Image (cartoon, rainbow, N blue to C red; front, side, top):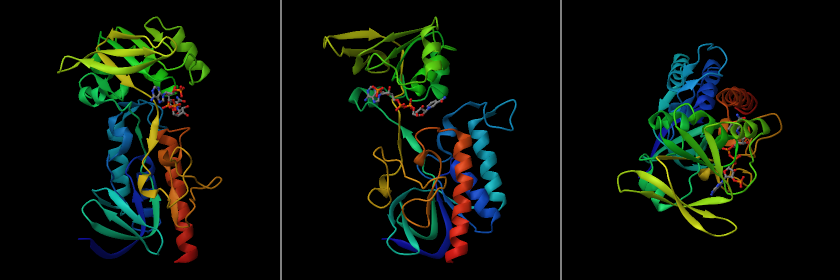
Length: 314
Ligand code: NAP
């Protein structure tokens, strides 16, 4: 049974990565007493990141989880409330908006800031789920360390795949990039770097047909060549799947305007969505920059947009 709370929040923030937490800091400092709903991965993708070296203000770098914890404390200090849980339904037809959580609690909000982020795409093979965490990973910065002196593969041909391949050369003995075409989608500078790297080689026009293992851990992959359709087994100790991300927007499908890849569409130079009073920030509306600092920047914008909406309508 759905349990309704009496309180109507000025601002409910969905997600607690850099975008959501920055929105919370700004909304709290504007005396809007925001509620942050943590989401499926509290802290977001930075929680599975080691050193963050490009966040301004930390010349020595900072660990991803420490950056999140500091930002969370900052949001709390100004009066943000936090609720552990995940929103499973939204009703945007009436105001205040209604959100239902996974424990059936219902929350009412005058404005919503969507900062629910994105998650890594996977190939979807049964053998992939079987060996995920046992040789297969979707995050080189999190798991690269475990492959010291090993032979690893990276699947994908975008910036993420190539960046992960370069990062993995710090640990692995060799890194093979498996790409389904013969051309990379990644930026020129990364292509040049991987091509000239002594530890990196390529298998092009090939897809992973199956992950092979001994029941306990991954031992190799079965690859299919696109033109000859020939299948071959290649031994390796680890595979990093880096084939893009998908935004966490399923609850907003047919409720607010999304692009063809499911990212929330925002108005020119603002965080406005197609529904007045709903704002989007961070990776859930950005398939291009995907940086902690850009997420934080748009989080700030979303809080200002929500505050302006409340000033005009409340
Ligand atoms: P992406 O650009 O969408 O690239 C995904 C790659 O995975 C593509 O090469 C794609 O192949 C391949 N792929 C997709 N589905 C596949 C499947 N089922 N099987 C095999 N291969 C598959 O994703 P991304 O690399 O994560 O980058 C996302 C965005 O973030 C981009 O705009 C990127 O520029 C940006 N980014 C920037 C930086 C940076 O500037 N430092 C770093 C990371 C990401 P096809 O090429 O054949 O489609």
